[in-house]
Length: 225
Image 1 (cartoon, rainbow, N blue to C red):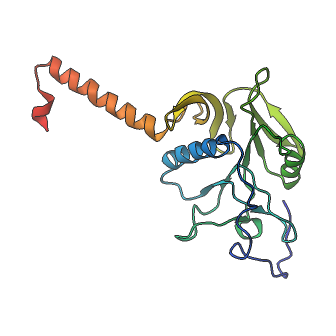
Image 2: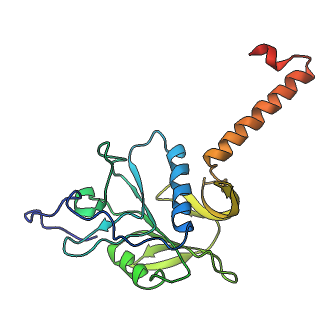
């Protein structure tokens, strides 16, 4: 991680640009991070020590532009500071590197396997996750862990991330009404954490099972309302 001279006046997050104005060229670059963040918000609803940024600038050097991954996760930071939320993630304010960054590959490579990978390693970001939806012969998901300043590829799907307490992987599912391969969080037993839509469907199915059980006992479930 970059060290900062405390005697030097550094710009605050409110003074720095909040975006590099680069448009996404693949809808998945937003939809996949949205899914991951929404599931985290349910799984960690009582925790206030995490932040999941989407297409947000990470400032690590006051003299350089921000790096803007498709998504990143930080632990040990405030969930939010005020009602205006973060406009960017400034390392000399947060005092914590993201533990994980995610890049979703578009049809035009943007340095996911070269410059970005090297930059994240240099910063010391522990996990680098790359998802390439266009791969057919190789796995679409790659999870790298920083070991001795070098990213090592971890096999498996899902891949357990002990420092985060969750696994990450891909499988077919439906999100926003779209059936396809999505990226999900998993518990230590390899069970996928459900989306809000799936939780609602599960609750509805449980109610239906209960109603049928009551009917089998000769009880009209509507009479109990």
